[in-house]
Length: 367
Image 1: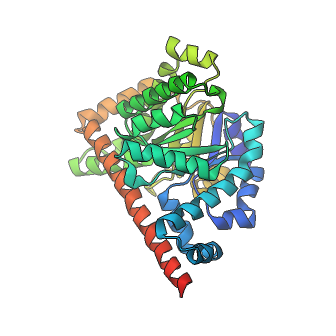
Image 2: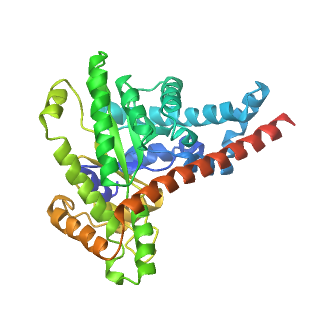
Image 3: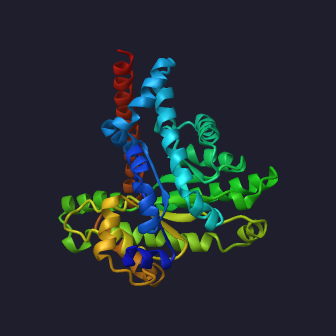
């Protein structure tokens, strides 16, 4: 086992793999990462499945079976992806058992085409939950204005949720409000709160990519680049600590509820000039998840320096960084609005690619 990854886990960071494919499942690669690399969870998204199915001959047999059964593209995608996630849940089940449900989680996302449709999102969440039929599943729902009430309703039904596409602090506050409202609803509906878990996926590197581009366009000092993503995430953790330190939450916690942990997402470094472990080692603190592409995980295992709490001691510095960026002309709210729109659009594009890939495979299977 990598000493650096082990040290990261011991610091309170749950290491989740941001990838899944049938090849990982059938070759034992995922099981090996759990055994040897401190991996205790898996996240997926439309882009990940599009890549897996585009390259995956291991899906051909199931596609042929579904084609023979008259399945259309939408049903085929649903069956292929839920099969992979169900099997991944089984691989991670021992972790789920040993951590009382905190980890050992696998996420699957509702169709991104539903990001602005509350009712359809809830219906899709229920459908995915029933199809996978594993207690260690998380349903990914975007933290859009329409997604937040869907998050509340889904949680109130006793379904665990991974809130995705969170970029901004105001948006994050709305997500935490939606979570607590959902837990209150679940309590009212008679659910065992200890079985309902949630993470809030706060995207990091994309914030730097957008703000760096704006700094370049404004001719701002290069020293300001590559600082926004980490500062923004640190302030998110400060908001998390404050939000879950209230009487309202204490009452729910006394009834068995668990905090919605921050999850650092988009942690692969986009700029080759930056340290390829920065979105991991500079965001170390307890009660968090870091979901990483395997390349980033390998970089941390090879040369990542885990140096204790890298969040709480830096709150003042993070506030100062964001103020300095504002003084340099960065419109934070405009950045966040753009990133949310682009995030949904990128997943919709990946979803379309996934449908096209599977559609071609279905046609070939019918010949």
